[in-house]
Amino acid sequence: MRRTTTSLLALVLTSGLLVTGCSASTLDGSSMQDEITAQLAEQVGGTWTVVCPGAEPIKTGGTFTCTATDSSGVAQTVNVTQTDDQGNITWEIPSTNLDTAILESGVTDELAKQVGGTWTVVCPKDIAIEKDGNFTCDATSADGQSETVNVTQSDDQGNVTWELAS
Picture 1 (tube, rainbow, N blue to C red):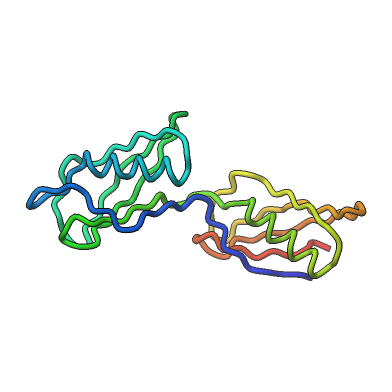
Picture 2 (spheres, helix red, strand yellow; picture 1 turned 180 degrees about the vertical axis):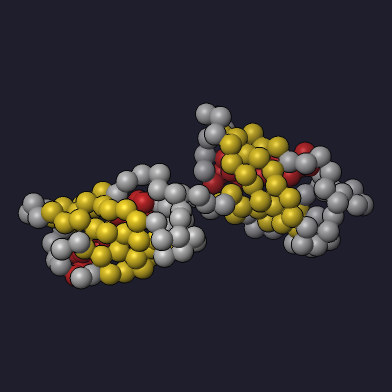
């Protein structure tokens, strides 16, 4: 049996510190929206609309959410954290699905090392992150050998273990 552990968070976007426009006591929601929109377009591409609260009180460690919607209408929650009392924030879109492309690549590389040959691995798409969740992927070697890869999610952070079924 071959087994490995990998972290597979799908889409976790984060910004570094972002100084937003602020008055003496509140963050400027409009500036945050513009900055997060620009950073999403840069990091992910596409057209985004971001809606943040109008005026959040400035508070080190304060948290709130914005909503980012892509051009197809899919909305994502944006978690925002204030890093200081000067209007600096970080933001992220938490992942809800595994990035199966990373899993496919990792299993492909490991099979080549452990078994030899060239492999293609295909996993289901849109796998929700779920502790103890299980699914299978199909692995096929260049010479036609087929294997089933059993995958188990070890936590709710996108970490998985896998092994060949045979």
